[in-house]
Image (cartoon, rainbow, N blue to C red; front, top):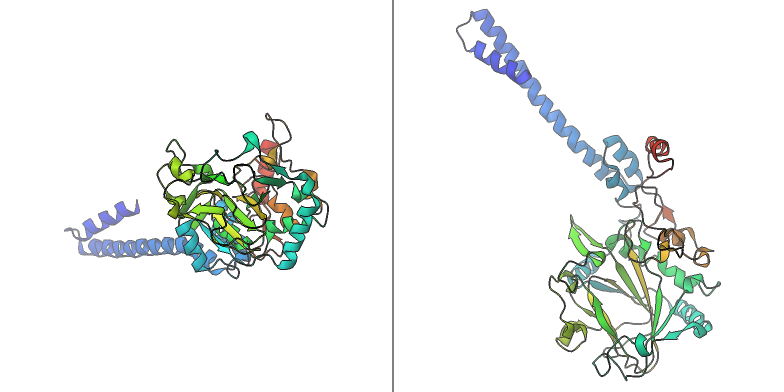
Length: 402
């Protein structure tokens, strides 16, 4: 209506109406033009002030600032936690991970830490299972089959061992040298997805056919393992840690990865999966005991036969974003009809608050998810829900959460 009146005022001001009338309408038209321009400027300033408030405030004040600015609840729930800037992943490691699909984090665990790992494993040696017969992971007389007799050995359940034997394994869940990578690659509120596993290879032990990858055998995108980069952020739907408890020299075998395969758009040929062709593109990193290989499951990776002189020991942990689950270990009460959050009680007993929040089932951070602080010193609540929304859910759903 204001635009219509302004056009009418201009028409009268330029017409043959009496002088006094034309002057009056010229004054009105000018005033409306000034008011319209001011209205556009004010609206623009209000729009940008919302984002500027969030940009300038410290992370600990993000909730209050975003509430005042009327920001989307998801935006503040997924934002940085206090301490993120001080404990960020280096630009070098970001580049290497985005380019190759993995990065080696050096010297995560000390000699004392490694001794604790090995003592706990040796105390539970009676629980180790060797893969033989139909459980073998490779076909006979292939590049990955090793000596054809010695199978891989597996051990799990260590998060629930009696103290102190469970402690070194639990430390992986919220370690100050590893949490920044989890926040950078998976996001705040990350969760343990699979039951962790210890892999052991005696000399001559078989490897494991290459698996994972960004593309299914059908040619479709393998989104449960997906890697993506959008809006300046890397994100992995399933991130893995290979915690090396023993030294691995170049040529020894063990963990192997096809660099850059997390971005491949083609099906990995079987000959590459079996390590029969293009082997120069499969990289076996030399690592020291205490190093951790952080890699996305979207890479094509596997295990080479073990040629080292003594047993290789390697822990595998897998993590997913707060609201995603691949594994079922955190949600299985034995019933396929009604799975419920149910890690074994022994896993959770005696855990620190930071470790325990990593064991939570999948749900969005906006729903009061407790997250590990970036320095692993404790926990933070990045997204408290507003009281009026909780009251509404109680009224509608008869529960605090929808």
